Length: 228
Image (tube, rainbow, N blue to C red; front, side):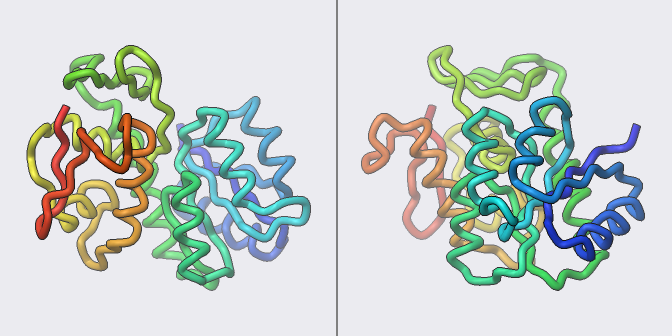
């Protein structure tokens, strides 16, 4: 069965192009043209990735992303937008987007990024044990959910990839290059800002006091270490 992509864009030409690129990569597509339609369809359908424009007719894509994540839906989201300011990409990531690509995009690059993100998300469940436990934290491979002291922690796909890396390797120091390679899939252009965004988002969700973190520790000059 082919992986399914939800395309959210109000430009018919862009929708047609995205649809063509996805189908050329053996992916099934569904297309909606507004934020409201996107929120409606994800209530009744499951997708492997969502391609989200920012400038929609009825609301900003940022608001759609925020709503999706507040519902606890961890489907990977890739923003595909004509807005190329650093603020926009960082804001999208902070809300729970997993990647941000600007228009005009190269179809081959977009297709490769989409398939890589789907693959990394699916790899979260490929393990022989159902539960991974590390101190007060645990991860259920079957449902792809994280817990702290038995209470669920709602994480986006990218947050989950990063936190799972930490849970699998407690007390190991990870450089930014290592984190980018494991979570983003390459070290060609390490984005320090993106890493900091996700470290801060994880701290907000797992630390008692994010200003004085006890679990995700900054190792000055090297990177980060997770202490359960």
